[in-house]
Image 1 (cartoon, chains in turn orange, cyan):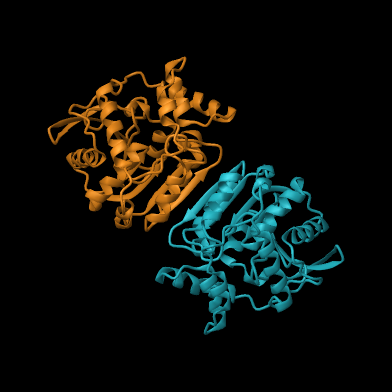
Image 2: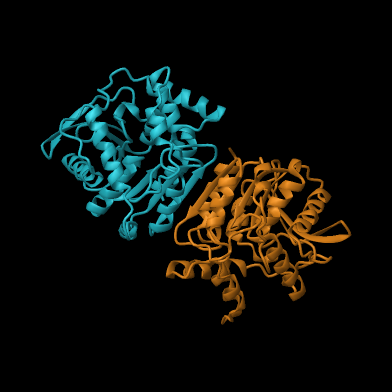
Length: 278
Length: 278
């Protein structure tokens, strides 16, 4: 157990695939680390410390910026499978041969592709606020939420992660407060990288015959976590993941949107521990 | 804390609504008791001791036979709301003014109607393997499962509660072993009562305009628990409950059917404790 926390852990760098990956590693050593894959326009600084520090009490937590994101070099690919290839190179460069993988939103799509491309590298998957390839985005409010203006601007993340209820807004304010505690922050996602991410998302969501078939090949234990009304990646996609993955548990929280684990961090940590320690 | 367990607790009787209700009460006193409402053709003797004894470690557990079932007198009504009226009379006759209510299958339908008819009597609801009024039963295999013959006959309950996988069958055998440990057993459900239950289920599942509207009025915290492929009340109904109840959490377990909590009793008990003790 290092003494580091989300707020104090220094950023380190490792080279792989010609990319200099920025990462932070902290928490209780000795078991399987959990590698965290983040959402659209998110960097290591966007994770909720309530979640990362909570996970770090029981296991090693690895945050990183994928290629072209935040403090990492390289170019953000316009394809989710290519993002997974980069993530796998990063994990292996740390000398890790088996890890738990958590993915949030597009990070959940990356996590699935990691499991497809390198099944032996993955012990268990946690997928939060995400969907399968060919996701049903008909009811998504993503375009409206990301194109609106906010005062202050960081309230975008309240709209993106939390439900419009008073309790949801209050949770959002608490999340922002926790997130801004850390002073040593990397650069935000560039417009070019965000555009590549958006292209990757659109491509991943294309509906083709048999688009869900790949899920039958992900035999890892999976915990799918969703909000009751995910405004970014509609909640039905979590149900679809559970129904098509051979070994998946689904948990949906009440009065929540895209960031259920930021809204109910203690409950999520308890559920995640039951799943990871089983 | 009484020293009684599922296997040793004596059957008691209480009069209400002109019915002599048979019940068993055990576990840790001092908090809110949990009142258990059972499935089609089920009596107190059908509960899984792994679940009831597990719940009893932290709270008082009350098993009972509703009107016309098992060791209780009276006539089984051909309507779920009427069953709830009887259950409410039973709970009040015990001098209880607030309880947690667990309902399994048709018992989950009764639990919802208890919350509708006597909201002040209910603290929290746990709904397992059930659906709302107007449930979607298109994919149900209930008729086939309950009309088939089994050797030995009690293997009906493996088919009704567990998935057809090898792991599911093994779980089913363990459940039957646990269930048959208790020697002091009441009578099984009569054919007349089973016919009334079936009429009640059919009536409850009628699809009418706004049939789901009542769910918006159940403001209690609800935990909905489902198997990944519920062959009796299809899993989509758990998702529908979560989506229409104002304050519901949904948990779906992998490789499971109508009896997910009998298949994963330890995980269910942990999830239930997180929910009930929150």
